[in-house]
Length: 146
Image 1 (cartoon, rainbow, N blue to C red):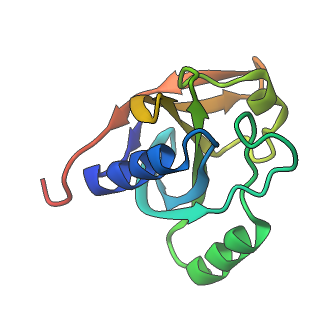
Image 2 (tube, rainbow, N blue to C red; image 1 turned 120 degrees about the vertical axis):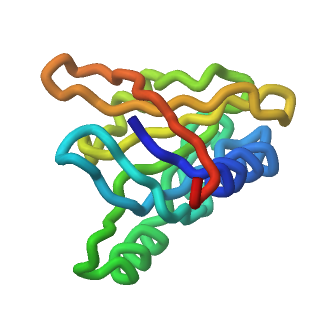
């Protein structure tokens, strides 16, 4: 399960709608809890989509954004735990291109399905290396302090 506080969820859905019809993307900082698949997201870092080619169908997080975030997190308890991107006019399901882009298999993938400029669904996935496929995980949203 991924815990994504409401304000951070709003940040990524607003960004996906603003980027439409292009894909948006960015990184999540946070920590894994209970040494398992429970992930707490504490920070969202939007990135320009620097993908080559058609950015309506692909994304690439800017390496400078990633390195700056890694430097900022340092040796603290939090680290980069995943990323998000949007699927304009497509479902919030991993594409074949997404499967080919699993460079950090332990990262959570959050996909925002945007249709006609409006968020339709948000889904989270982890990549199962053994089965070589994504598996959906639950997203828990809440307001911090609740």
